[in-house]
Length: 500
Ligand code: BLA
Image 1 (cartoon, rainbow, N blue to C red):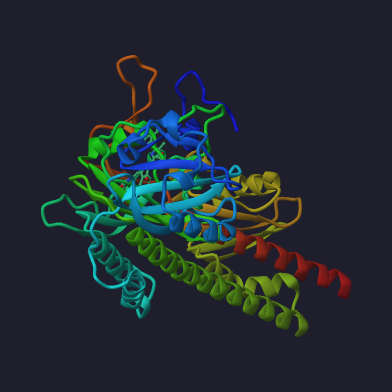
Image 2: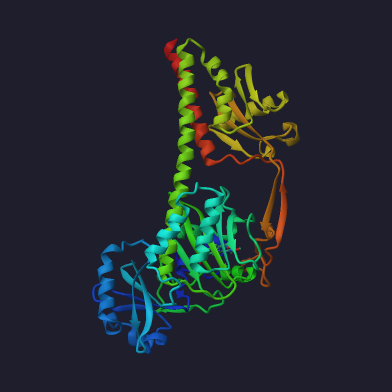
């Protein structure tokens, strides 16, 4: 809970975006004491709806200003709102002296009930929301997780919300991201296949989106409405649907030619796997009931992606089990551990998705598949001797003074075996990759006139880069599988000692 820094943050990830102290102007905020509904904080624009000034509302009870039935609906919903849970659409009803029909969204945080009110836009569908959600889920339920499912999902979100462009954006292991599917109006530029640098969605924002799953900016050119009275530290707006967002991000949207946006989190376990990112060239609202559908659909897609990742992990784990069984069988038949491992080397290469491997053992060695020239052995052994645990590099320059000497191999994953430089090295060939970035990534941040302010890049023109000297990156799963192989080989060696 750090106070807002006086100087502008020097890193995008340092901006406390949940403490903006303001909301977007398409709604109103009343933060009440749950005991008696006394209004403790409100947005400065309340007179637009209630025709009462902020000072007249602060300290009074919500019951004096909105229909008793609506307050009762809020009260009923309260026990189901745990702190830290996303704000939820609770009720709709007529508010203020002119009886405007509004949606009420609420959540509990910091001991207050935060009631967010939005004028209700006309519904786009006559079906009850749950039917729309069911239709969308059924529309992808039969598809395998992959390109076709993501394309269909993007199209369904576009049908639901009417945005000009709906993308499925997936984060890579390095936190950059890629547009893996897109549904768009014919006259907007395609973003499919483009890569965006990690700094476009900084870490604190990615963390926030794990909990606050649906976010809407109906008009990025808005003027923020302050929350009164100004609190120190400001109210935590992590879960507010109306939270005024980072000005840097608004500038980013404007630079992209986007006026309205929405994003829906795709979450696998505790990781933000990706987002549905929606763009519109004109202002666009998404009423609370549609956001609830989008949220449900996002949670379904999240579940499907999680299921797919778990399937892959299970398949790999089963392959590792089979390898362990075969090693044990070979030892049981009287083979030496070295002979057993040598015979299974191709299976180890396959398990770790390598192109080849070298088992270095004392003065001897065994090779399988593609391996680097023998002249590199001393460098590999030195690497193993200092490694400690499993180490993996994607680029030859990370482990060789003369990368060219690796002759087409770029990546190496080293599993040290003992202390003398004995090791199992698994190699991956160089994979030349053509990357199309949305704008030059090294200009993700540009200096402004005063030279101190962080600003997003102005151009998103495709910027091509050919990445050489790297292999397909070793993933977290690859490293986990390697650690498993290391334990397996240690067990085999121990068994030999026990038998001796
Ligand atoms: C937020 N940046 C975001 C969000 C997206 C992007 C989707 C989330 C917005 C939301 O959910 O409301 C970026 N939008 C994209 C990308 C695509 C897209 C990659 O459509 C691709 C298709 N941004 C910068 C720089 C900084 C920065 C240089 O470019 C920092 C100085 C910051 N982006 C930034 C911040 C947020 C953000 C702070 C959080 C906004 C907020 O929630 O307050």
